[in-house]
Image (cartoon, rainbow, N blue to C red):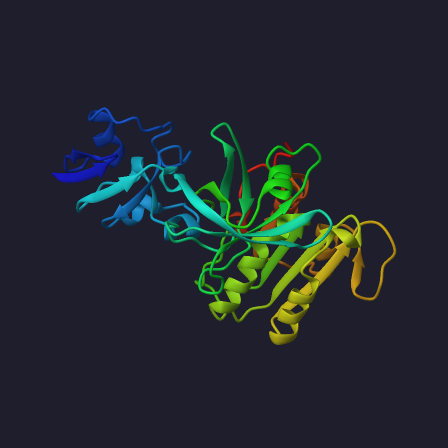
Length: 323
């Protein structure tokens, strides 16, 4: 018999039973479907205690690193303290400590949060205008390098949250955010693996954090960052990224535009097309995608067909609603 602590209650788990069976017998509300480790509906997170290897089989490395496991495949051998997958997204208070324009539509917002849990560069938070209205924003900041959380917020016409941030936020304001969530972040497990980072618009935010996090961990393989926009004025952080490319020979930075005149430091074409024209052979690479949902969807498919394993393609699935 092994004890499982979940939602403040202790559930006994009989020898040979899975965590899912123990919680279900105890009346805990745990979602499940196939019960064979395929659908991942019963995904939970271990806060403390060892996990059997079978409990994490088939999960992405980013999920494994954060303690996520399949309840239907976990037969615990020692006490476990577990929580649901949304527990780390509880509301938090943050203070606005900087607002910096990046281009005509995008500002960088720095938030100080004293109760912030450990996060990874590339994750995202939710910003709440009120209990019913929130939007997800990726983090451009990197733990260990930046003292505060940084968001890149693009203003949308009639955007209820983005307009509020652009027009009403002031230094010192207190706002409500969620804890960091998401699986689009760098792990230093394969430092020689080539990295491909594709971004459009403010989708650069998490990739800027991931790029600097990879360098902070001493990544040795080449890192190719392609940032695309319709016109040049939609690009930003060019000086900072060119500086990183000069300081690190592994970093290759490309600015892409799909319309307009092209200067020497610009590439003409959609960001995905330009990247695949440069790199016909990407088998064994790791890819990070963020930006327009159509680009992310197409990139996931085309990179897989070009040889990138699905487990090595990272893109969080939240939708940037322009309202």
